[in-house]
Image 1 (cartoon, rainbow over the protein chains, first blue to last red):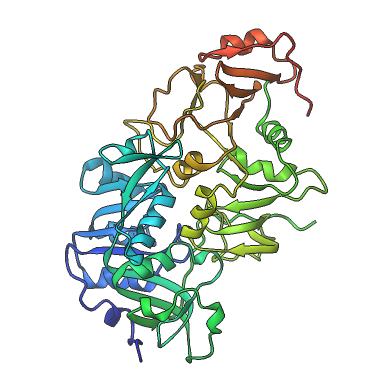
Image 2 (image 1 turned 60 degrees about the vertical axis):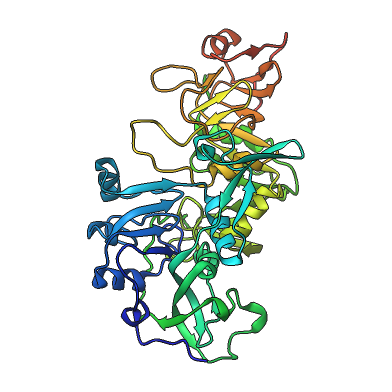
Length: 232
Length: 218
């Protein structure tokens, strides 16, 4: 079993115009920055991107907005991006905003073979418009469908050639659920290790969910809001 | 005198109880963490995947892989744990988080809340707010009593798109503290020096005023 590919460009083989991609990360934390750069090089257009956020103007998914490769974003929060705002207001970019927990669970459901589930989030709001609602134990819930993707692009800290992944700190976020929900899941890692080096008890994403893995070189890992305190 | 943001956070901190798991929203709610009473054990949850979030790191110790839901660099306290977003919202929907504090643009006297969208303006998204308000058993809204135009934010009905319905339990504004009851906003405390009349004139929703409304102790 060897899922290792040479680099990001090889890992994205098969991605075509108009495909749906899941892209891991929260803000700029834990985003697959090498795969995003390779998508820019690949030049595919008309993409639907499922990702919690849309990056900033010159990093993360913002790079794909600059090159007009994204047709639609499915996200929970898209604040920090001026080009995004411009494209959205001009109608060039379609945007579907969904509650963050619903987004996470829809990805998980897609990966777990559960076509739909009921959640209380959004009941009584415009998020629930046109959706089935049902009462359980006196409380109202909204039916939400699974999400799946042609490709899921995730970023992990360490991985092996079986595709087993370990994430670091809050860079985990949406990556595990998205790794489950891609028809083809591409994982980029900071360190590729030999099988057996990762403790089986500590693997976050079992390799079965990962189709291709590569080691990214020179991660930028940009910080969006650098907040510190003074030493006394 | 109306409360400062710090005083609002200080007042909300008095709602904390030992052993609580607490989710603090972006803005003034974040400041609540600075006023946890000494000796009290409260665990802060950040919905991007932390239990046991600590203060900002010392300069030079920032870790790009460790942020809070506001995308700020943070630290971990002993006993903390990290998890994925699905697990995080399982905690929230599963009602394991005892207290949620968040900001709002409008709240009604029946506990409806609007805080994510202003039609005609750039919509940034609801983030985790809809999941939090739909599930939490105890939601405190922390906001200014009136908007910049001087209009009440405590209403009979929201004018903005809703985030959740009949979910807010308590409101702390710069003027007072209110419980949401079947009869409307029950005025519990006034900010020091703020009169009941001022609060009445700035509250559009149904307001219940007990015979004695104490000044807030800070």
